[in-house]
Length: 218
Image (cartoon, one colour):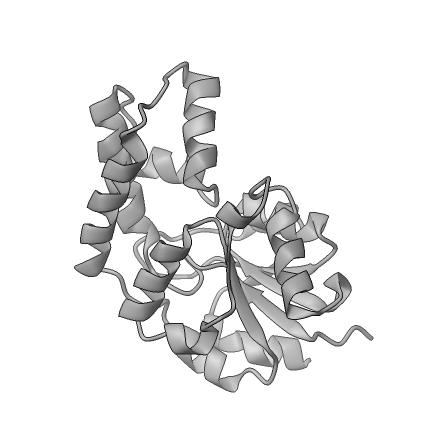
């Protein structure tokens, strides 16, 4: 029986309820640059991707080259919005407190963004010194690089790692790294999702974050 030695959390949408804010800010930024997408369309097309990957995807699929000032301006607006609205995912504090395993974060977001959102929600102390970002690897999700980095830095074999993700790209990355993955799809909240796509990608369904410690203990 596999016994896990490390829980790797994604950040946005798994630890902090920031995605509805981020989608709205990105939709507005893209509209200003000439690409009119709704917040829901932004979520569907870019969920789980780093901003570098978003810029590359827009250029590749839409033929729109976002200027050098796009990312700094987007980040400024995003950070301002997050400071006024980000909250922790329901039940995640209880789950973290109940886990008897080491934990870390592996996110497509920049380290500054992780520290901001985790700090504002009071979760940062639980992960201090164990924040891993896509900016540290050559290829972001759905490539396995970020999760492999987290496992290596934490000194845990990949097969003993379990990942909590909420995006198909993240699930694919975890599976490619040889890890077990739970796909978090909450029953309620600003963005409600069915777990089907995450399960098809290879995740075990997780609807309530409070259940995670019990599932891992089982």
